[in-house]
Amino acid sequence: MSGDRNINTGGGTYNERNINMGGGTYNEAVYGNSINIQGNFININQAISQTAVQIRDKLVNFEKQGYTPEEAQIKVADELKSQLDRPGFKQHLNQLGRYVSNEAANGVIGEIAVIGIKAVLGLIGIPLP
Image: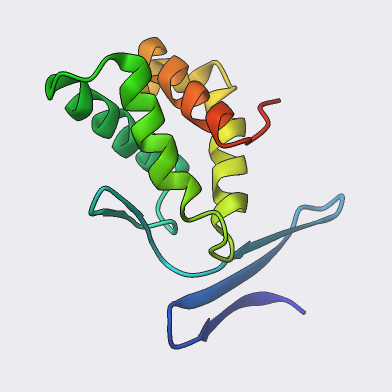
């Protein structure tokens, strides 16, 4: 199969893309179209860096409400954990884990944010490279 496939499943869209990389094929699949953290929807079809920024902002907002950094991480982790059974969501979080493990993420979202996001991912059992 070549090219992109989009299938509307009624509850979201399943997107599949195959890219020939010359030395092999990269297969990408995303199921559904959003995740919810404390009433804020994150579109999982958007760039991973945007998801990282949204999680960072959520952590900052909880801290502004008086939560400690650890309490904020737990609150965000609980929200994410409640959605792990959604198709494609865990894959998206695994991609996020790879992203924040890359030094370039520090420059995009900041070192403190990367530390917070890694802590959140660790709390829900997402392995970091």
